[in-house]
Length: 546
Image (tube, rainbow, N blue to C red; front, side):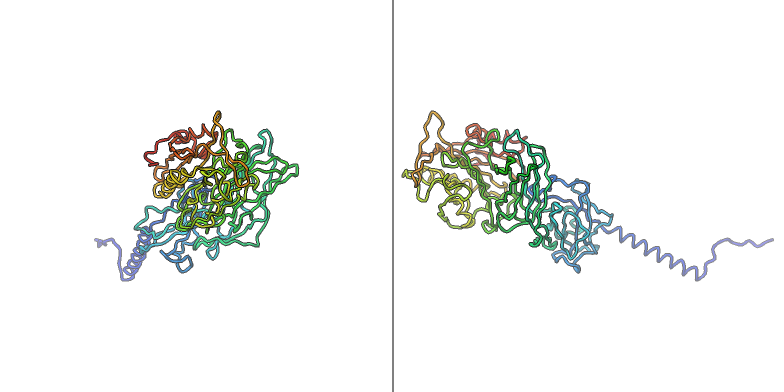
């Protein structure tokens, strides 16, 4: 009888050692997997900080847009020793919905030790970034954006990682049309002349440096039809007005060169409508800014000259406040009636950035943008004793600096105004408007058009004379058309206050729609069409204008 052998595995010391070693490696590998699984990838949403900082295609990102990201130890400078876990110049891409994911599946993770980090971002992504500096060449005509708002994030507060991008370059939009509606501007080319083309964006702090030896001419592509074209130019900022010039060239060889009448600031957008006749003649009609009215049918108002006054130096403004990209670019725009020698209206944004403690300059003088012989001489007041040199844009509406206050004393900003009205109820209304403009916690920029309306037939116009004995018309009444947007709801509200230009100074409220019917001007033309009709019907002071 054979002895039965019990089948099994013979275990010796060597086997035990091998099993132990295998168990160790498996355990270590499992621990590594657990460690990896604990790492939380950072997810991002990205928006523009304000609707005025949108890209060429609008406020949405395009499919395939790619940003570059850096993770830095919280509150530390962007340099190599402060980079978190090699998260340097990470490429993230979107499908167009504002959510960004790693372009190469190389995720950015939160530090496993729970420490916080700051995120710095830029657009468009470039693999050639070195020394944390982003090279800019505006001949590519690409929008450049920068973000450094996302600070102190960690896995403990990982639910709201929103990158807010702001424009780095200046943006100039020019809408071009022929002077005569039946003419064509087919084949026109637009060339930027002698602009600085190269610069560097310091990613550590978002500061832009300009290579002043990189000046060059280059063509900007236009879009549109044979009767309406648009160019959009992204340009490096400038120090003085007139540095940037655009040459419009027609196929027949005729050209016209136009100088942008202001310095270009970082992140700001400027817009102009220009009419050309193909013979080298140009006319800057108006900007598409919210507050600038348009005369009926889109034609020029009779006997009118338009002058847009820009803020040419940041020192003019109150540095304690910031406003959006387009509003603090400009001071005011006047449409001057050269026949009656008073303004049709003066249009301007109101915001605390324009307010301060600078004293009144009394710097009476001619408007440099309109021929002097078309303006009244108001070195002293009007010859009629009961009439003041009434400011249309008030001196106190522009007192952030003495430089900007001087501009309110241009003669194109004056009307013959009853002195009791001017120092009484009209002054009270101006104070109210400034109070509304100061309410920046609830409302965005306040848009104002202040105008003069003459008597209509069969009433006769009354005239007074300037210091040269030349007549100017006396308005029957003055008005202030107002528009503002509620920050939370996004709703616009408007109203008009009119006041008789006499000692009684009777004040009444009316709607913008009624004022349009009376004056022939369309106000706040950039309002969204779906809202404009309803917004312009309001003449109730409550609740927004109490």
